[in-house]
Length: 348
Ligand SMILES: Nc1ncnc2c1ncn2[C@@H]1O[C@H](COP(=O)(O)OP(=O)(O)OP(=O)(O)O)[C@@H](O)[C@H]1O
Ligand SMILES: [Mg+2]
Image (cartoon, rainbow, N blue to C red; front, side):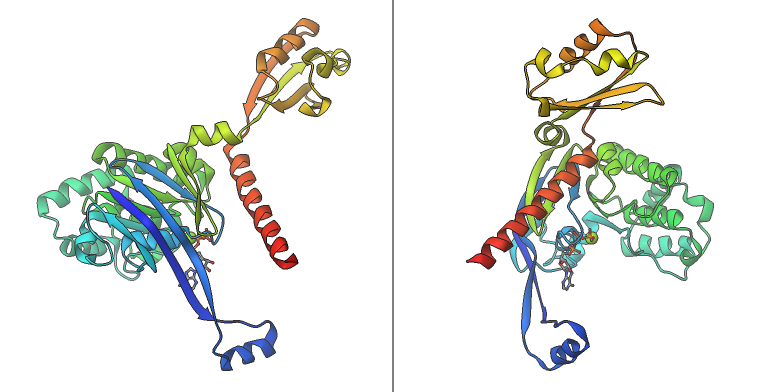
């Protein structure tokens, strides 16, 4: 459905100098700097997939989406969406895709939403019959009726996002691009938007590419994620696999009445591991003892049997590293690596 091959995008902008003097100097200087926003990225996405496209601020997510939608021309590389080059055949491509940029609306600000929809119906050449059917579905999943006659500028953020999503889907596109579709929304609206995306994907096999900073979106919607950092792809695979390779921590929390007994357990000797293979914590107020460890070195049943044998355990909770932690760790690692590279370059 989507074939992105070695796509890159650089921006050339005037060199900036610090301070007011610098600003003035900049005005008279011809020096330019090149910023590589997307650097040689390739991937392909099949029909009906929902792919999370994630990375820290400025990583190049929106730039990639813009190239895939045909808004921006790549500096090099190619992109095909349903067999169409989005930059060369913009009209043909427009029929295949729907786009939502969470940061700004695609709708006519002063017009009632209903009129925006009528205009889009004409633009996309949607038949009356198809329109009726489509609206019925969109009303069901996005509840647009609530505010269908209000001007877009009077809508709340959550309503506007539902309206934008509805508008992007009116012509039943094969591919839906969502750039931060849940940004700034409360939990309930977020959940509604996610449900709507799920339903659309299931019912129409719509391919969805979604950028987000909300790990909840990813966990609920995407089986596959692509992570980019400073314009380069650093991961492309399933969420489970990512958790497997990065999520090496487990923790077990048990509610115990006799902490004295737990305190004296020599886990390192019993498990024959180094002391730094695990960490323990005790919350006196809740009588909860927590032990966190590397799952490659220690197994959950080992800990449980040690505890069960020695103390009366009331309640047990086992947790894996949260995806949020994993993503944070990946972003941090990339940052550290970059700093190291810079330092190495400076020392040369
Ligand atoms: N039109 C432009 N002119 C110059 N530089 C740009 C332009 N658009 C983006 N950039 C730069 O390219 C880089 C990538 O930007 P992009 O908007 O793709 O990031 P992003 O991953 O979407 O980030 P965020 O999570 O903050 O939305 C940034 O350094 C940005 O400043
Ligand atoms: Mg962005």
